[in-house]
Length: 166
Image (cartoon, rainbow, N blue to C red; front, top):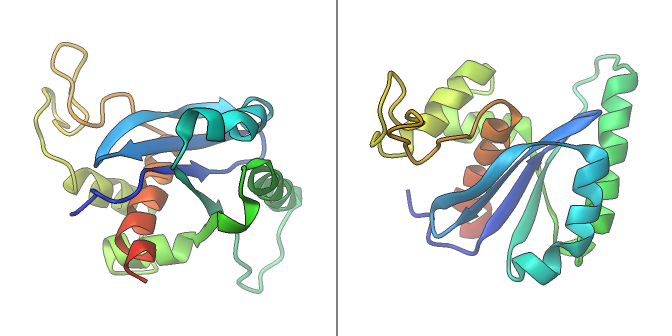
């Protein structure tokens, strides 16, 4: 995997909190899960700190099924995050189906499959049963990246490997 492209900040948005991951030179430099109300002002100020980063947001797609309040709330946050970015028109909206198809070669892949595909892209240099993540004593390249931040990292990888090619 060639991650030597433009630095990227990716977000896996949720109704109340979102996962984020920043990649620089192929390395995870920041990742976590943060409340949406905290992420919004961070994105508004990000161009001062992040300079040349590109923002990729996971976007919701319609598959003809009824959806509930949570989906609409998430879509509302996606729009707010895009608007907060210093260049809203440059924000990449990435669909989960595309991420799953690219990383797992199947649109039917589950979150566990996506997580494993992400892990497989990083060197197993840490300790423990998942050396890509590692342990506190022997951290791997994805130490501290978990939960929704893994989904954000999947969005970042897709953006770098597919969107940058076009």
